[in-house]
Image (cartoon, rainbow, N blue to C red):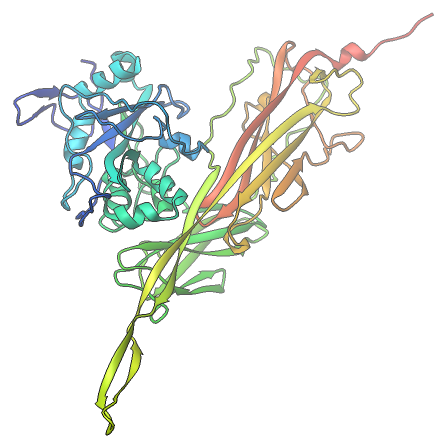
Length: 566
């Protein structure tokens, strides 16, 4: 077996049944929490042990899926399901839709350990040992069609998502933690109200990351309390197995918690948690201290053992800086009360003036970058309402024998969760500049300018205090290998539908809003511009979209120069 680095010391795991599984020496980036399950009903219940995993093979070099997702379970199930969709796909905007096909999972010859805890314990060590083993690697290789040797040679990693098979409203479902969070939003919290200990605690907390990967953060919140849909969708219900050592991150690096652009409307958030009911009689409050200004959010209500994201919308300074944001909480608690924010400028990397004498021998058109994007956001707010319960308090009878007394309201506060969401979509059009004399559609000669229009659409029904409009777009270019230089685009419209274009080019004789294609750019190739759309902020973080478009290059502007003679 090929020797690989591993976090584990053991090479053989002996199961109680006497079977042996050898390690492929994988590195398991996963941890777990959970807690007691509570009681179920005849229409809404889960049986301990009815769980499994969804595995997707991921390419290490660009974090894209190398295989279709595959489900594994210790027995077969007839269930309603949403297809084999990974957390990566949902993050990139895939909608949750019921599947009309029968559900199929693969049953391993060597049974998997329990995935989802139902007794307050955790099975994480057994999960790590199983899925970092040679047996599991071969099992995944057989299921996905990727050879075992290729799977463990360092080019791939496994995205592992816990699955629960449970009955909700009399129908048996298969859901990953992410699907449960998305589905609860669709049914307006009814899944949470019936199955909260499973779908919003033990299932999502059965696997989470110990350190960031695939664009998902490490989980630093509590591991035994209920979590929100937004927390599930953004951070929980996943583990990663790698088969190659990577350089360790130095503990001396003081990385910022969040990065903002200068002169930008942003949202800073913390997650507030409650150990007892927070009602209008005893609400919580949060104060953010940012650059000497205080922003206070009051009257925060949360049911006991639950959480809510609390945020403030503010405007960043006009010059780069590193800020420390302090958070003080009254009536509840938060895991992080100090945030480091890095404020950066993007307008200092303008490409140099292209010259007719520029050359680039041996140039090969590079591949497009592969950056993470976040096209959907989910969050919510708890509200309280009073449920009256009128009770007659008798004071006895009067001299006429009539009962006297008064009515007393002995009601209680009830909680209602209102979920919100936002999505960002965008398109990009790259075309030859209008004054290019010999352009034909999307085909042009090198040396001339190209123009672009980037159109974005923000869709949300949340109040305006919950989000910012799209504010930033910038483009990078193939002649610089999509590195070093960028063009910050200018906004031409605002609101929910924002449009961007290149800023006027300082090197353009006619002050055109263009980028010039180098004269030396190879014939018969595509000049593809890569654009990132940033700074649509929500309580669930920043929405972003990655775009690209091209023009075809055939010839150069020197071909258009000629001398007319009699």
